[in-house]
Image (cartoon, rainbow, N blue to C red):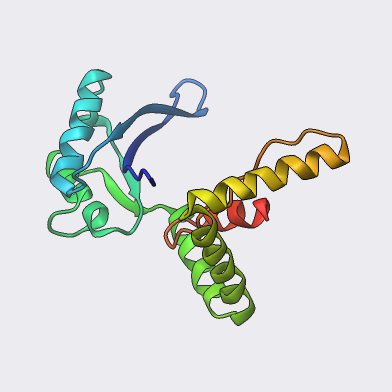
Length: 174
């Protein structure tokens, strides 16, 4: 069974006034089955309060992907934050934008579309049957035994349409 959860990651970037050094810290990773802008805002506020951060006065920027629950002009997280912290400028996350560009570029190449389509078909074929998945594992063990070495067992990875790194992970296994 596939277990999919949404994680809301809170990263803090700050500059030390004395040295001008930029620092980055992971504050929290929170799960939420509800991903509306308002619900994410409530989670954000709880994290800020738990860390005792004066975000309403000191937050100068916020960056997310392009999903409407994050960037939306009416109900997105960035709007809720700007209501309390008007100086908190919203900027699209450049990593997410780059992933969209790469995805679009790859989708124009029929060889790449076929390759990743075949990887997804292989994943579905193997992992939607416990019997086939068990045979796949057994073959890996047999190959290791014939070569006289031990390698960790690999699982074919799903090719996600929203996470570009899943394409690399799926390709690496094969």
